[in-house]
Every structure is written in structure tokens, then in C-alpha cells.
Length: 155
Image 1 (cartoon, one colour):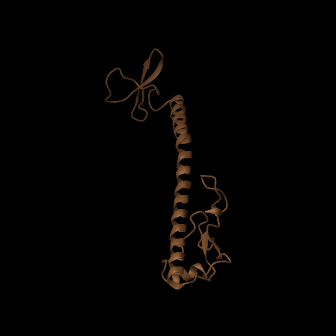
Image 2 (image 1 turned 90 degrees about the vertical axis):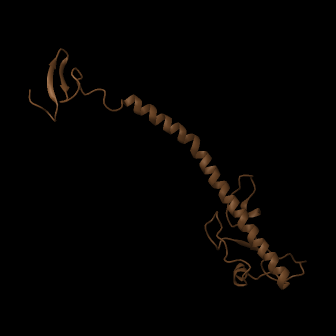
Image 3 (image 1 turned 30 degrees about the vertical axis):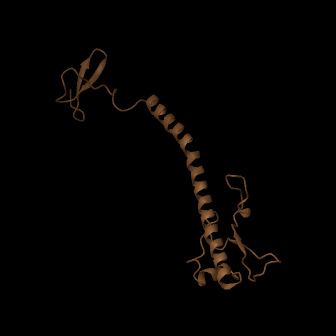
């Protein structure tokens, strides 16, 4: 028979089989035995889906916790700067930009939950406070709750 793609057809009892030139005698290629079966592929895909369903929620939880940690850190830095400003100048700053201009912080940090530097909510001093100024405290402008159940706006 004529060669087909480097394979030579051989007649056998169950129909034509293909023998590769240079292959061991008696080893025939009948189109089976190469690659993966559909069942094997489905089993592998099921295992991958199971592992993904286990890992994905943990990943997103850790991502949310890291944003909360970054928010806590940013709030602490700004609150410390506000307190230091008030101790040095005898008044509270009129804006967050004043903290950066006076070099108490390098720049206004980005709110990790909103992705904006303008999302911060500033609180004015209580009426009985001795010092003047407009920024007594700062909070996140993000909506929603933290993993501990508290509102971000209450931090």
C-alpha cells in the first residue's frame, strides 16, 4: 500500500492498522492510545474547578482584608499628622492639603476602598474645643461594612 504521512498501511484481521517506519515490529498505530480521552479531560477539569472554588473565596477575603489594613494605616498616619499639627500650631488644619503643604505628610493618601484622594470625609472640631480649624478628624468616604461588621465611615 502507499505510504500516508510516513505511515504504512498494513492489513490485519480487524481492519487496516498503521505502522510507523522504524517502529518496533508488531507495534501498530490504529488511531487510539494517543492523547487524552474525554473522560480524563472532564476529570481534570472537575479537579481544577474544585480547587478554584476553594481558593477563590480565600483570595478575595484576603484582598478585602489587605484593603482594610491599608485604610487603617492611612487613617492612623493622617490622624497622627492632624494631632502633631494641632500640637505645633495651636489650631487644627483648615484642610487636608494644609497637612501636606506644611510637610506633616508627604501627600494626602489615596483611600484604598474608593481609590480617590478626594473621598476622605473631614470632621470639624467639637464646639467646646479650645483650638480652631476645620479638620479635627478624618474618615473614609467608602460605603459598606468591614469584615468586623462596622461601617467604614465609623472608623
